[in-house]
Length: 251
Image 1: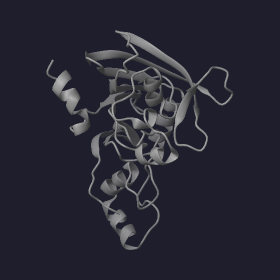
Image 2: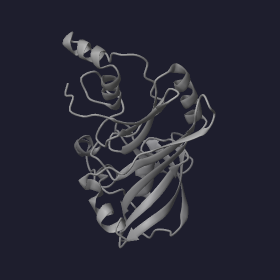
Image 3: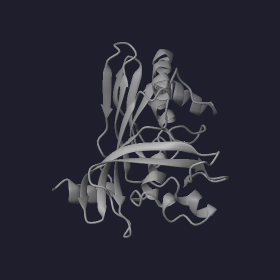
Image 4: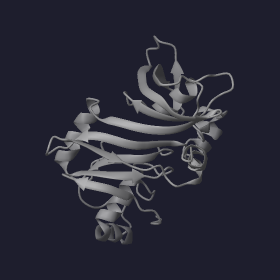
């Protein structure tokens, strides 16, 4: 196991741990594979972690760490974890009841034959899991295996055929923002899984490559004070976002 990465902890309040996940890192993974869970456990329970490695352990060591939601491996941004069972229960309940407001930003490439609406928009699509593949697809209404995916958004900035979007998913389907963006003619930059994947082998190679989709903020109700709290994470300083910095940040 390699210990070269470190997760940025934004804050820890009343058992809620807000962290910034880098793209390319899974939320959870089996022992021996780096993940948000393994790195946070290493940072919080250093001695126990090193002892487990020395003894050839096969389970993540340390105290309680609740993970009430996930981010795709290819996506960067803010996540909420729980360091107490009480906080975990409160966060899980808020996610289940869709009481948590999530804001994503995405850099998208407009297809030549498509147009994008200026101002607020709503995407409503029926999506389902593709059998035997790690991806989803948009299907016609009435498919018994499909579920509604709804996202609200707006265009923040544009430069020719590249646009910078703010997205608020109102449902939590697998790869929801990625498949909806592609379906509506504005695939996310770097997301070849919903653009050019042509075979099962391609899917295995490209499904986890970093994409220009970032969880910028997440708003929840604190389990103790019952007040609204917002955690924010800046867009990462990586080459994937160079065009955004060069073209949009200088306007």
